[in-house]
Image (tube, rainbow, N blue to C red; front, top):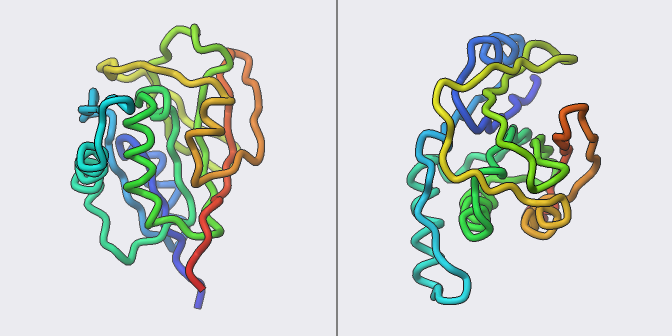
Amino acid sequence: MEQAVTVFHVGSALPETVDFFAQYRCKLHFVDVFSALPIATYDDATADDETAADAVAQFRAMLQLPDQTRFDICLFWDVFNFLDRQTLRAFLAAIRPHLKSTTVAHAFSVHNRKATQQNYLYGINDLDSLSVRNRLATPAGYNPHSQRELKELLDCFQLERSVLLPDSRLELLLHSAHQSPA
């Protein structure tokens, strides 16, 4: 019997994405982090452990993931561009327990931090093409990170490949740096 694939999708559940995954045996977890932006953050210089733990707890409450959930695929799209350093750390701490050593991920970043904000919703049409459409509302908190910063911040992932797209976005393919318990 084929094992179900567990997919974490940050953003709205677009019909084409649901249709695409309907072809496969999988469990989908759609979490629209964008609708909660801006998310309360903390300052590294003045934060204590309790403040950082509160930020992680806020994400865990938003995600509402069963403890046993482990992701095979994470589709982050452009969410990293809307989370400051501390908030991104809290977000990753909240999902880290749900990663496997074989988890793969996809994200978009910017080639230049001064790049103008792109306001897109992403989905999957088929194995070879994504859907891109304009968001109705612009998410708050645009705060893009350079590729070097993301490599440092995404400590639970390793950058496998980055591709510079014609519109100066970077497409990132990641794999887990997480070590599953033996």
